Length: 398
Image (cartoon, rainbow, N blue to C red; front, side, top):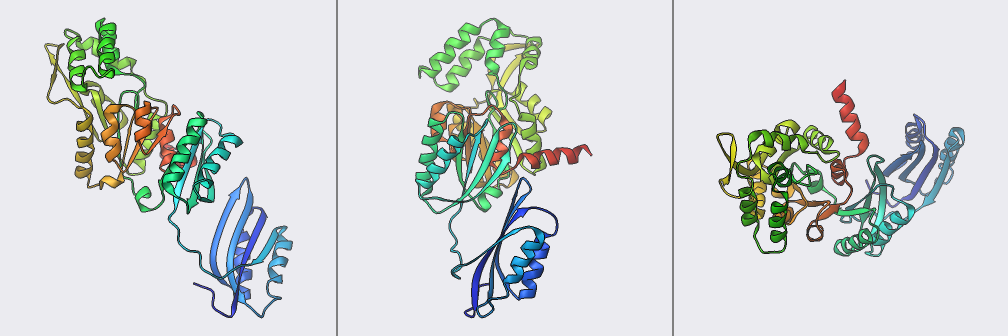
């Protein structure tokens, strides 16, 4: 409802110690005044309340607002009253900037705020999302040039290695994400499976040499995978089991997958590694889909060959689309997470591409990046707070 011509528009700000009944009492006074409520916003920080109410009151009733001051006096609250313009607030395309870091010092927060301001953005609200395992805040911003702000944030993150910054458009598209697809090696797990297998086969230096040649551009991904797998010929299934036992999940991986599933997300794994490991990870973590390269095993030993097509960069992107189609999820409502060049296509095609502790070329190409070592910190980019995660865990345990 908008203020009419015979009304004055007044901003009432209530601040002080929070306790039950303050909002109810305030609205009771406003009802007695015959005020029109135009807008309301409230925040509580460490039991300290700030409640703003925009109201319309008759222009010829100067004494009516004294009741508000009396209400504040009785409750030991500070009441500020200010006449403001009655022009409705114009809708402005909102964005969200997420700030994540181990501590987030004042200088780091200043760098984030400067990046927004220098792009002509205005910070409307700041909400803390977590204290553990990292500190994170969500800045709701309006106005400004999102592309300029994004460039500023990238520069601020580069100048402050302990801080990650991301900007996303706020709205239905962000809240409607429904599919998350993860790379495996150095993303879901801390290891590279091919290196663990090479250790078991006693050919670590040889595999490393092939990897180096691929990184130097002397071999493409498919050729490098086949060359490395060929070096594993003769490795038995017992060695595969030993390699499996060496796998280390990335910190926060179980919390991340468990929370996504409780929120109704579909989760999927895609890897340039091997299905013998990704299938076990899928079952262990309750993940719906998985795809990886299949090692050929005959009579309990690796033949040094693969079965079927190579899961390369293009195949990962195709898998994203296949799972999205199977689940009836528009591609704009998907999230892809990875660390290497093999993930670039799926990061580009997902609704949100996240570079997780990634190589520089991947960080530069992705929508956003994280350098903290906790996979569950990605939840904060989706707007999920630590308190919500812990509340969901506590509910499951009861």
